[in-house]
Amino acid sequence: MTPITTPSHTNILARLSRVARESGTVALWREALPWLCQVCGAQGGSVVLERPPTRFRHGVIPLATGLLIDAWEDTVLTASHWVPSADQSLSTPTPLEPMTTAGIPMLQILLEDGPVIQGGLSLVYGSLAEMNGPLADTASALAGTVGQLAALSAELQSSQRRLTQLNLLQEVGQSIASSLDLADVLRETTNLAASMLDAEGAALLLIDEDQQELIFAVPVGEKEHELRQQRMNINEGVAGWTLRRGQAVIVNDVRNDPRFTKSVDQATGFLTRSILCVPLQANARIVGVLEVVNKRNDQPFTQEDQEWVSALATQAAVAGQCPTLRT
Image 1: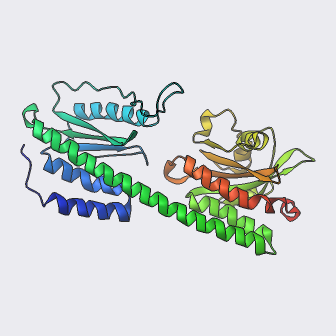
Image 2 (image 1 turned 120 degrees about the vertical axis):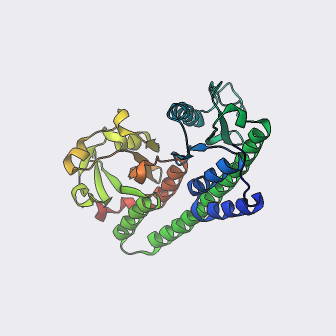
Image 3 (image 1 turned 90 degrees about the vertical axis):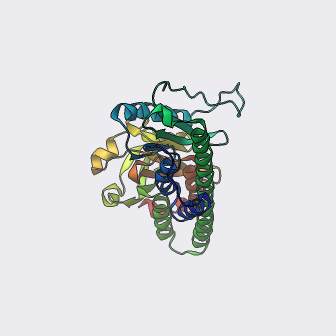
């Protein structure tokens, strides 16, 4: 197979850049994959992305080759979470196991942004003869260009999200400072924590020091009625751990975390899959926790999410001492 004549790379890259700005990284790669297959003369292709975790394919990929691609993409996703140990430099290469594809007409290209692995691209050919040197060089160069567009798109979206969050934090602070009904402000704040992270629910839990329990004082989400005023011992659950340690925590799979307790789920009929929990600290004293649960579409909570919710919790902590919230 020989490369098919296509519109100029400049025009296509301009279109891809627009897609990246308007629709994000996944849409960019979905648009780019058929073009990469066409311009590089491949009969099929596959892309795996680390964030958000996504896989998709285009064209003709034989079953046996597809299974090999599956295995390689699993390795790519595992390697994307690797961090150097204390005795290694930040520039230490990721220990990605090479994949043996001798005799298989396939090119595999890591998608990288500096030392960070974004994902991987596989291009499948009809025969080894079609995989000549210039095509391989072209594929690597074009994949690198699309990868740069993806990285710039992700950074732009992240900057826009941070700006929105900063504006919202300022509004929350002003509301807390001026409102006569802090309970309403905290309900809006808790709802904001869930909506900004596209999560199924959130709750502000306050400590009852006499009973040594955490009270679901301000729950939001589909089970908020059942959750309201539910209690749990401060020695139980991810929330209790956060309260006792004074540390934020992300648990993206509660089934495999011994700190998680099922008692609240059993009492409410809710199914918790993932949790982000941060302490509410006022005047050097922890008065409760702010918890967000179940990002939609099975997306994991991230460090950026934790920083945002922690900043929100700082605004809410002083108002969290309001006695009207405990009744």
